[in-house]
Length: 244
Ligand SMILES: NC(=O)c1ccc[n+]([C@@H]2O[C@H](COP(=O)([O-])OP(=O)(O)OC[C@H]3O[C@@H](n4cnc5c(N)ncnc54)[C@H](OP(=O)(O)O)[C@@H]3O)[C@@H](O)[C@H]2O)c1
Image (cartoon, rainbow, N blue to C red; front, side, top):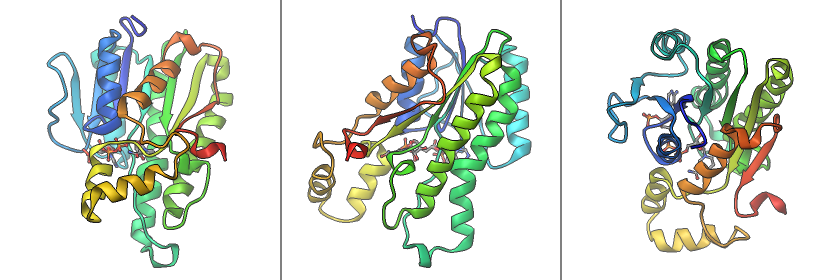
């Protein structure tokens, strides 16, 4: 098992990619601390510790770290998967919405890194940040999301260098469009979901969306000792979208 007896925090664990990461990690032997904003989540198992809360709130993040220390002592792996997407033409976006996007994708990640790096064992640990293909390339109507996810990549690269001497590795997975409930719901909202899907698939070299499991496979690789000499890296899981 690739994460045998490792302790891992997975943020945004309530659905989609976070749910897939949690089940991959459980299968590989990790003990899990899960978090999301919902009060309860269906995918948490009795052996997992699920702590709901808002990662934009520093007091909550500090308390989450305190509970992790009490329950597990140390934390080997942190997956920063939570995130918030908001589409709008740049000039129409309200300041409060822009601030929410930057907080929920970037500043909250900073908070989790700040409070969880001290909990990593003396031998080291691994952070895996879930950014996006849109952290690497721009797209109309997604400008703030892109800025936040691009910022997350640079947060990870800087932290990778700063913490290398402690053998804390910090890497990034940059998914392309992934078939999670939030994406499926957005196809439904726009009417004719099959036409929506075909149109989006046509923009992807591999001509299909990623599955949450495919993204989770990449997260597991960067969390495990199979990637022990990789830090500060960005791994696109986007069907070739950013290869153009
Ligand atoms: N799906 C895609 O096509 C795609 C593509 C590229 C990148 N991504 C990135 O991959 C990650 C997961 O995506 P997904 O599609 O699985 O998303 P999702 O189903 O919308 O899940 C997002 C998760 O983040 C949590 N969250 C958001 N803001 C939070 C906050 N302030 N504090 C605590 N938790 C917060 C949500 O909690 P609640 O549900 O409890 O509110 C939820 O668990 C996100 O970072 C997303 O940006 C997704």
